[in-house]
Length: 219
Image (cartoon, rainbow, N blue to C red):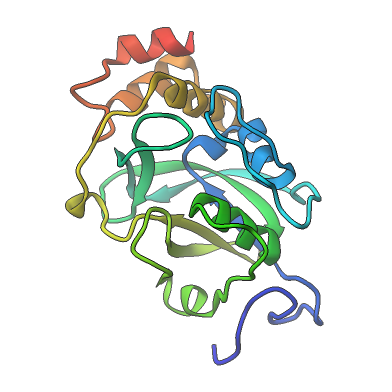
């Protein structure tokens, strides 16, 4: 690809803002929590609010899917008070996700809010779409990944640049785990027990949370 692919630009879109699948694997598995990025507001149990996107239209579609790789917990969230979820495609297994079909402009504003930036600047997605990856900075969620396509639109997500190998795993908070568990139930129909066993086995949670303790949170 040799042109800039951003809002108002893109193959076959005739100057309209192209559509992409924002592929969520953390707290945005939960639709109401994701809504804070679109419409503005503070998520239930969260310590900070979000301004929302410039374009506040709802997603055109939603889809449950899995990606190759795995999830781990590291860092510390200003919203949830514990570690955050990150995606490492090099890990074995499958990552349950929820994809939202939004405009490239909406995706840019969602990414900005995850990066602790103000929404309003359009991301250049050219490199990510051409190579599968683009590092916008060294911080959390500043690495864009393009793991494939769905129904003719690119899947896009963001994660840490280091992967698990370069991270210091840490324990997530109870509120964060409740949000993730509710999101897994909404998007994939998982029971509290299945979600609890999945979350408790992720690096960072292991050794701090047992499946039984997480299931009690979700029950």
